[in-house]
Image 1 (tube, rainbow, N blue to C red):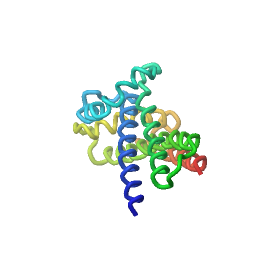
Image 2: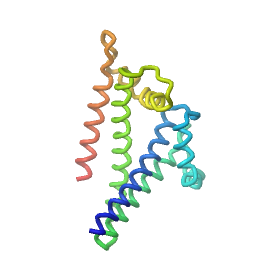
Image 3: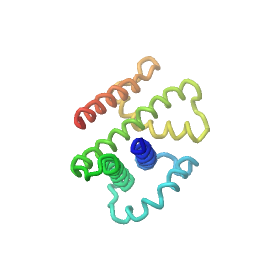
Image 4: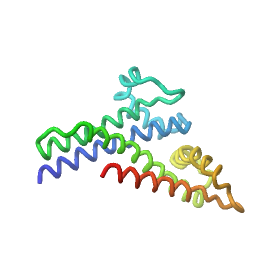
Length: 181
């Protein structure tokens, strides 16, 4: 029983921290407003653990990939800790690394899935909102929407790009799930 509680605590803390790291990467990759209060909070929360890693991991163009590297390390550490504390032995590190890689990819897809849902709802309920949350959601999803609009342009004022994005996300997540199993 205590193992289940410990597993829940380790998994929750690890997943929340990995989520925030992935969110930092996506905010930067999408060119979201750095001065948005939510962006500032994410940067402030992740700056201390990322500072040493940013010196070691080279940037790719304008992208700082150190949040991805740390998110990967967190996912691997969570798997290793859970296996160690529940089974008492050391896990297969290659399996843990693959799980971490697929976990990062799945996390990015999950963030985009929910951000697209939020963007669609916001476009109906509060278009052009000045609140920092909706602005950030729109800024994160706009690059993906513009890519999807190149494939399916708006038809009669109806934007079908979210449907394509959902379809692509579902296909990719099903393939990730299949590879992990």
